Amino acid sequence: MTDISENLEKPVPEKSVNAGLVARVERAAHLYYLTGATEAMIAKEMGVKPTAVRDWKKRPEWSAAIRYLRENQRQEATDRLNLLAGTAATAIMESLTCANPSVKLKTAQWLLERQNLGNEITLPSFDMDFDVMEGDKKVLEYLQSIGKF
Image (tube, rainbow, N blue to C red; front, side, top):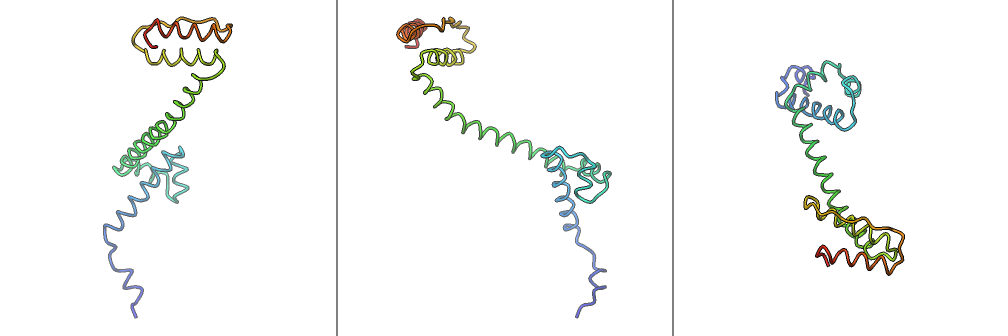
């Protein structure tokens, strides 16, 4: 049987000590970035003094963790926007084919304004109090006048 005191005297490999510290620094950086926790809050959560957290913030692992979180957050936001783009396009198409001429016209104006950003095309404003046939006629005339139909 092995004496417990023999195990206590054995040196701890440097890698495992460093790996544990790196994991703690990364966890603290996550708490800081994702929850907005202060140094004191992080210290309390992790059972260390606030000065330890201050020291951790100077380590390259801290900077790397924050950089990773920022990049990951940007990518997730981009992915979500890309998913929503299809839904938005469907809503625009539905608005363009809506029975309400006012909705149709406003959607067409909005769409054309965005398509022509930077092309300095001024869209006329239409009186929204018109009947369906007159409204459709005005939209068609306008689209033909700018070569979009």
